[in-house]
Length: 285
Picture 1 (cartoon, rainbow, N blue to C red):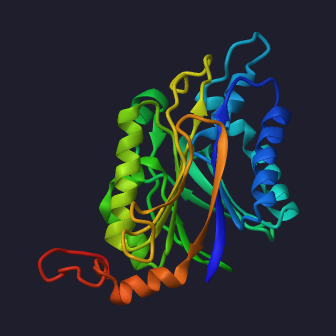
Picture 2: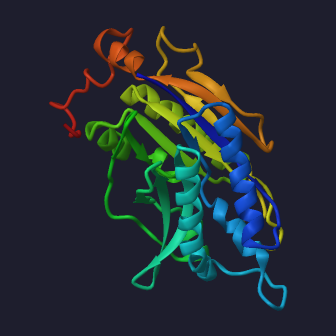
């Protein structure tokens, strides 16, 4: 099975209203539609742009204000997914549950359904700066194009959680990300390649670009989208179907062929998933 994915290098800049955010988001989705994409991926924390709208005194909103936009965020992306007949991974949005903040990836189906995956591993800055809570479980999601997982940024740096996603049947890992410098960016990028090789899956990765000068922890962004494959003969030599230009406002698109994954798992140059030594180390079956 083949299907087409797009990944958005979302340009963060100060806005004046929720409508500004909605128009920018729809612009990327309309672009993906022109490329006939079946999925479009937005980055982690892209809804922090809403904090730049500010309050009545012109001060930027805080992270505790961001969940107040949740209903409008959900309504917007449910409408866009249905209107454009597209699966939208709406980056992540911060929600509040039982008085605690969580960084949650959302999958919007074309039929109006919404699935959620909270970020499982929380960085020190997210804990100290925003008191973010950690997700407590991993789900995979069935779509008409196969089984996917959503693992956010820091999550991809942990081999065990991607093993679990693959063991649950995921062939594609969508990874919304947000990094503020080269070090963080390359940690996520390099480990995305490692996870694709280890598990013989596709990884679709993207990040924020631009700047929110008034929003704490979002003043710097260093991002680049990439559509990553296992490293084997049926795929590009560097394991890259497409990548964006660093720190540019843009969208990338490529076709994923699940049959190629199944071929290399069965008789590739290496068969990393099949050759796990579970007699020597614990693993997910």
